[in-house]
Length: 535
Image 1: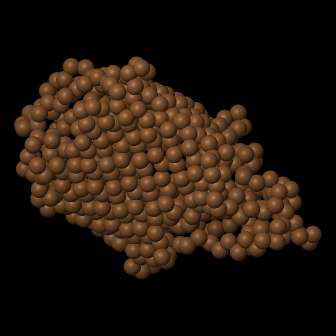
Image 2 (image 1 turned 90 degrees about the vertical axis):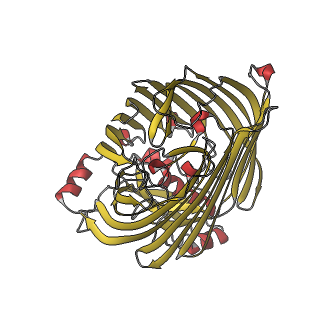
Image 3 (image 1 turned 120 degrees about the vertical axis):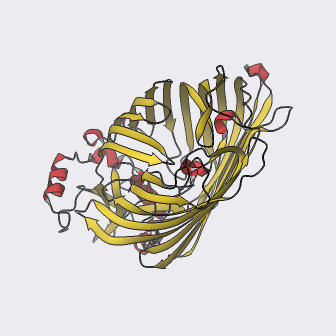
């Protein structure tokens, strides 16, 4: 779903820093004579507001990232000529690591004309103890977890979580290794147990870690058993046991490189088995008809194509606060085109497809626009089914220093969606003044507009304070045959608390919203506490 992959942005925006030093060195064909590493502590004790007992204690407890972990990420080596693109690709790779707060690479020219590349990395605080309570759309969640994203400085992550919400109680374990056995292979494993089932997944992959990486391959396995809950008017109306197994085996190679753009192609083998148990009506369904639950066994091959261009710009204060973040403004896209075949054991013969595209625009540091699109589905002889089209447009405009207007418009359209892919309108879906799962549908539109103010107030180098005022609008094409719902609207205000020592710069949102046209069964005020950000 595109809506789940929407880019999160805020201001102030800053254009990419000048690249002239490295460009000039590449132009004169300078050589890298040495690579020096500087790995900084989480708290910079040279800064007065960070040189506190909290900062000193945190630095003492924190396990500094090992040099070997950083060196394995580098896309250049001693004795090689300077290549600007590899320098900045490496910076982006380092910043993408969950245990790195910031990274940059500076040149130091030696008397003999060679260059020393000084790789400067600042560690993030990676031991997260989460214990909290959140309420979104009137539904409450309690959670406790311990997550270490840089175990003993090795870059590996381990996590334990326990949570309880209106649907289930869950506990789980996760392990991640971005450098399996010191290689470019990555491993992610996750197991989670619910009061109504479990989820297990394993992903082993050698990705396209750089623009000109010659090949990639991967294996993804998942097995889940739980209950499928279907809602209307914010309450559960149907429930059914739900079982799904999926296997994806993929491989791709670099087909062509032209300047800063590449084209890739590959092969995908896909297997997905889905089965449902007996449907139970658990609430008053009203005019909502019971869904058709049809077991599926889907198997088949596909061709994959993708294109990407290196047109990244570096910004700050986008997803998080006081953290550099990288966004690609060029057109990027991918296509997956295959067919499920009865000869492979599939219960139906059907072509399937998945198309994704994205583009960004920024004429100055005062504005940024991002467009994303995705369309996927399958087409048996009876016509398109589980076809889901998603479009979104995000716009940011800086009004003054630390002030921004942010807007999002998103449109989703489905044709004969599987029940687990129904669209909803409500709190979880961006209508902050309404309960979750207000109405189910096969199409919806959403619009949100925020005024954001980022203060200069920083507490002990840990948290930065911001404020927001917002309005949300939306409508859904209902599955009960009543056509489009009325246009719902809400207004609200909130606090934005930026975690300044997290690698991803998480922002905790505390907001209160009031519906402008609430339903009789909903509360007058909706409170939201959490870090789920849409844009």
